[in-house]
Amino acid sequence: MNSKSELIKQAVAKIDTDKIASYLQHPQSKTLRRIIGYSKRVQDSDNEQEIFKLAVDLAYCLDTICDPNKAGYVKDENEKKH
Image 1 (cartoon, helix red, strand yellow):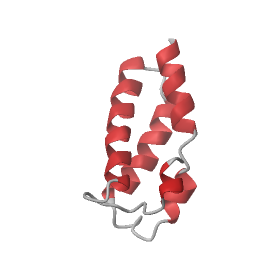
Image 2 (cartoon, rainbow, N blue to C red):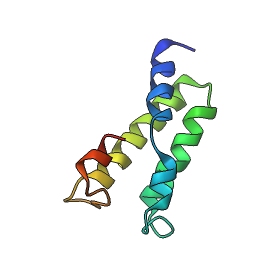
Image 3 (cartoon, helix red, strand yellow):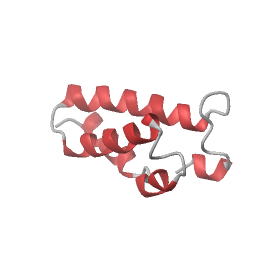
Image 4 (cartoon, rainbow, N blue to C red):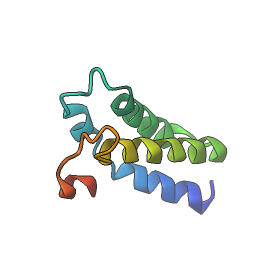
């Protein structure tokens, strides 16, 4: 596995999936469920192409929950860093 895949895995490991699962919208929100699923799949995968694709999809979902003009689940600026 190359260093890009390792860097992606390290970054994904920092995502607080427990916090995401605790949001009230979690059971109904496809985006929140995708973030948790993609995070687990990135950590489990050894395929570089799959890791990169999942990381792109994960970044889009994270942007969606942090952007107040989209879903805007994350209101606190400090939470957006985690």
